[in-house]
Length: 405
Image 1 (cartoon, rainbow, N blue to C red):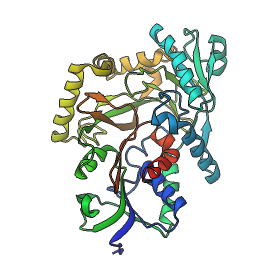
Image 2 (image 1 turned 90 degrees about the horizontal axis):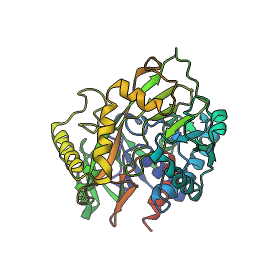
Image 3 (image 1 turned 90 degrees about the vertical axis):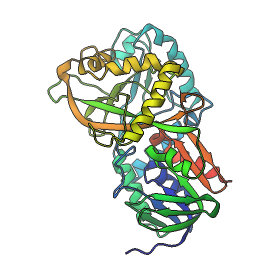
Image 4 (image 1 turned 45 degrees about the horizontal axis):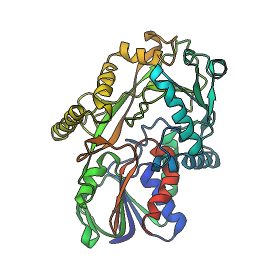
């Protein structure tokens, strides 16, 4: 059995993209720092990171003062540079953002201004220009946005490359198939399911779907809970005549933290459409009854009903619209707003599905829009690290460590 030290300078919980980039950033600042990385699965990339679309967002959607805006554009550049340097695939395909109703037109100026302020390369395009960029896109809107620098990477290859770098580092110890079952923040002490006891200089919680559960065991973030939303995708049939040059997104509802159903092009140029945003009744409820917890389901249902009743952020209308997409014919209708020529036969069922670990503020009865990080003298808890967390990770990790100063 591998021998572990009793104490580490840093203990990181969760080996998704946030945990791994933070570990890399620690070593870039102090190559001799002793780091313990604990992951509950026996391999990495099984949850949020590995199920990510791989789109490197450019910072168009996020309010100028937000953390997402601060780290997205720089993070995208850093991630592309990392992939180029390691020979990992990068598909520079560009993205158009289309209004799907008259109400969306005024949002174009908001998104354009945000994009420019956040450092994105973005252009307003008219119908003729849009037709040249993306011939299949809906030509009804008189104006759309085009982000030529938007790229796609392979998130599993990225996180495995970074993970292997850590494996080969003498300063990093990795403990898989284990998780914390007891914590004593005053003594900087944790105990794991396998019976290990560790003390630490600083602990960083990047456990994604379980970040709220873990933080509360340290007495942090009691005002929050995570509500998981399931994102289901359809694939573009091999028999389809639809050809897309890049990505096509709708203008999002800026009141809720979801980008709407859009096209996704992988680095191998396979095309999917999604994701939906259905409530999941378990933090790992990817398929059917898999991962459903009665305790979690009752808590999730309670907060969803409360949010629906209060109707904060226009949640009631949004939930009505989203629930209709459970049926394929309605899913197709939402895509036809972007690509009028698409039909039912163009889309096929796929196994691509993810869980969005969306943070919910209990006292305020609202979904949190921005990254949320809470700290104590010896712990840091990344509570809301949803899109564009993958894109932002190499920049965001610097911020996390700067919080200790």
